[in-house]
Length: 525
Image (cartoon, rainbow, N blue to C red; front, side, top):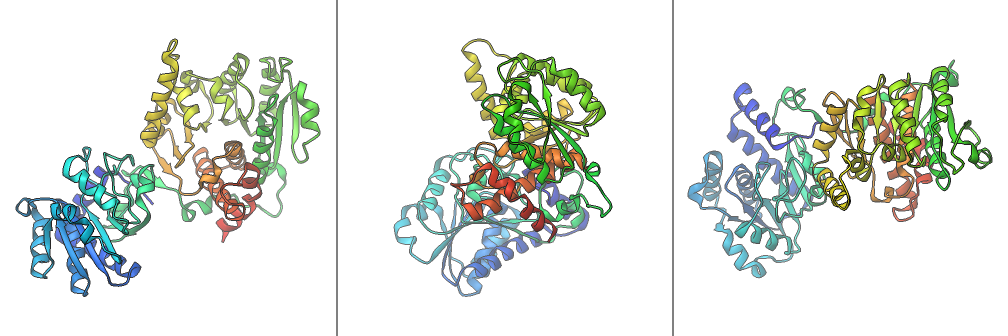
């Protein structure tokens, strides 16, 4: 399913009206009807307060108010606008609501008499601003939103909670905190991006008559990951197959004090279905690794004596890639050093196998995004926002460095989709920007928002597990984009399964690995 911006939704409206001759008034009528139907499904008859703005969102609210009133509900509309300034369809719906006997008052009365109006067994419908909000909410609108939020009553938002950007999920001043949001045609990006996701409540997506051709247009580049589209990507295991059919992954990972990251990534890679995993490890830690490996193999690599790899390891790594590896994943727990930077830069430019770079691998490349343009094979990066900020850092001098890093992280979090999309396009990499939600971007402009996962996954090692899963799927022959989308979705799904058993507070990375088999079973069901 696509997830759209405000402008994309406007285009869907225009195309539906202009090309398919479906009147705007009919779309508004269906939108309001779907809101009323959903409310009657959720709640028993009760008092309803509808806060309406002057645009189409307010018109949708007027329709819902009229229908609920006609069904015998106690409905009152509070209009945050001069009725004479209502335009087009909203004005027509306002007049229809009056003819049905819906009381319409100015929103100032709602603010002034809130304590009298906000009685138990009352719900609020937020129809103030829809997807067209383009500036911060201030003044009387801000005051009204605060009054509604403080009411303690259930709030049902129409299309998107008022005050939330449809495009970025950012709060544009004060914003409604809804218990339910009823949107039309397609979800908006802001429903899934924080803080908007936290304001949305339970989301309902209603079909009000937009043509499938319009909703599935290739012009809409951002999609929501779901089981229906991802389940068919799971590699088929043929009866006469052997381990060589499912990929040999070389995992260059681990350093003194960080061996756990390597083991988590390797186990996750095997659980995701990889045929063989070889761990490229520092020679001074060989005994530590050898005492713990079971299914994995090891490639002993020269180190600097401090438990981190020496650039001398390059010869063995490149030879192993040429002779044996189908995929190379590098970075989890590997440490940050000049030697590691040289190792990664050389692998990027010389590897004949796809490369996944995570964690310390990304940190070692700080500021050197030009390296990715030298790649001869697909490159997948899996940064969290801090690693992404360091990767984008162009070596600002002195004390400015820390403040710039914070500013870059802030920009990333405020517009995760644009950050991922523009970086992937400019560098030619597949980018998995981890976080809430994780966003995947391809070099060709396709972007995906993940819909699985939970706060319990904010734990050490969860990212290493994701790297291993993506490497496992890539080794089994999936395209880089498919490996990323399936890996991210199933990683979150495994985390959700683990949380249902262990609880979010007690969840650790190895619990996610243990739940990967159950995630496969759910995907195949």
